[in-house]
Length: 553
Image 1 (cartoon, helix red, strand yellow):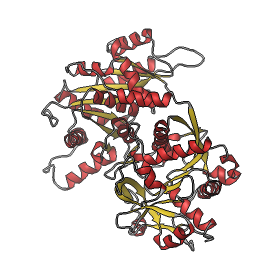
Image 2 (tube, rainbow, N blue to C red; image 1 turned 90 degrees about the vertical axis):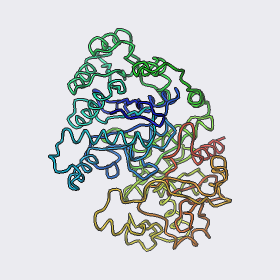
Image 3 (cartoon, helix red, strand yellow; image 1 turned 90 degrees about the horizontal axis):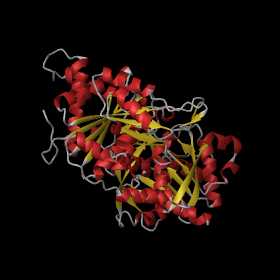
């Protein structure tokens, strides 16, 4: 059965899988293919399939898995959905995300409801069929001409075999409408000095063993692939040399679609789909990239967090949306952002001297008490020394605590998350959450997704928002939190100078705070980084970088 888009044409499906190692760039490849096909006039949507048993990404440690990205409709997903949104400049919703746990949960529930009409429910074909049903449902809701579907993990792992089986089924039913792309790593061992193709050959054979022949091989490496290796891969992997696409290491992920087009990837995809070639309009994308690449001004931003360290290595993916949003804000100000990862626990041990070289500080999301006192010290340093400060979710909550302690003199003020017995719970648990925690209802129970925020006139935040939102009083921002500002302390805090800059439309929930006579001291309970995009940067990040630059000058 052929699925059609809203124009009645056959929908095209592009599956992206990985070879040799994890972290090879499948998500950016999928997003870049989507960007290219959008540039050719097609409506594109993207799906991420993750092989883990977790129902969603919400309960996973960000040090192990990276950032949890929240969709507008409140799903806690893999960070790659954030990449899709940034590259495609559209909202990607919960229908476009699935995990092994989510698939099995649905199939088991359907079996309990007798929806299989008493037949024996089996792993094959019922699990792959559920995957296909979800892919088609996401396509129908989006009305996309093309669906780019990233399958997590690496070919050869048993965890993603059922997803590959679903892709194979779809190809059997729609052979002219399904393509396969493998993103595979080509190492260049230092002592050998030669790019090696053998790992990729093995990866392609592992994919072949699942009944799938790739149409394209994306050759990821520290250097661009040369012609001898391109031909060698083509011969051993049963593809044409032109279908081996170079993907060397580059400084910016936003250059990837531009690089792919140098190898005419877009037209080669159209050729395999038996569609006519067409020009690719990447004008706005190229202008955005050139603006950032050629910027001469620099701004140094410190990110004070606790999800960086994994053994001897640093995992910046824990805050990937924040990092990209800062880059978007920098590009809008014709400058480059030099980001540094600062451990909140190191600030606790060493003090604030380590912060003095930065033009501005950001404290992003977080959970629990570890590192919280270091964050509070960093905030006090910014407040007292007029250093631009931007607090995101937990960073806003820490700013309220710092102000309560050091300006109002409320010794022991804290969040109930860190100290349930605090005498001054300036941050407290949201209504209804206490019962959920008592029942161990952690997954998917917090405040999630897009919620309306009433911007308070006359604030620094309102000034930042006025251009993008055209003076709209209410905007939608995304949330992911269980604790919030305690309005019992609102009058005290505002009288002392910590102004409320945004609330829920009925005024009952404080969404943002600021110190209005500070160059930039803003905290948001929501996550503006989730909706910032390279072609549509979030105004708070634009304003933050702007103020950092002005003070630096």
